[in-house]
Image 1 (tube, rainbow, N blue to C red):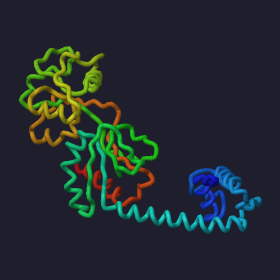
Image 2: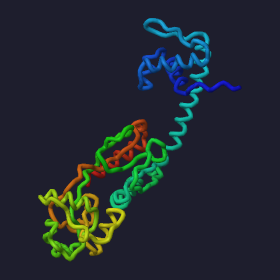
Image 3: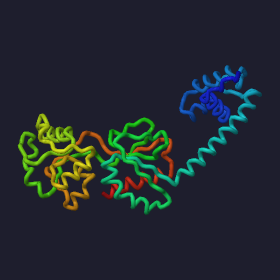
Image 4: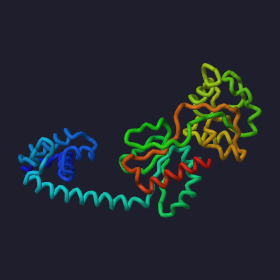
Length: 294
């Protein structure tokens, strides 16, 4: 019968302790405690049936058996680190970005040409998804998401706040005066998220938002609501930041000066373990400069 292969956690603890000369420095590298490193090494020793370290009051010392295993473990982990480095180098020519559909369609995609002009060595792949993608799994490098920025294992850089206000085609502005009163009867249907409308009206002192029968067609994303509004099919509630270009071009008009918020913001997020990646740093610096210039 083949003996069970030792735990990789135990092997990693042993390799770090052997390479760094003690449990405490190994614990700092592995971001754990010296007691945990000692425990995993002891588990390895129990499984192998040999002592790998001699424990002294203030230090540990490899036994002859430990020295033999350490040589092989150090060689194996060195090869692994070299392989990871080669994989990272090969991956540096491809930047995979995931973003929310509206932000990706309206704000990011029209600007990506400027990033490519600055970094022609990078091939950019843009994924649009309403659901968060797993950045830890390696399928994507960076994400632009909406939330509060507290995601375990991710570094989050704030971009701009999540705000929303009524927007419509300029020709409809006069017809939607009085929109700030949810009880006001208008001939123009409402578009967009009912919860945003309710928050906007509550900011103006109303206890509730507009009735369900006041809403027109339901769309799956904010940029589709705005497209319908630009076409004159209703008044939508959306971000004056994301749709600033449409407002500046006269395709869209703000109906009311007040903009509400749900307390969230847009963030650029990427794994903490990859924060030194040159391509991620390049994209981060470019995105923040785009925000600053806008």
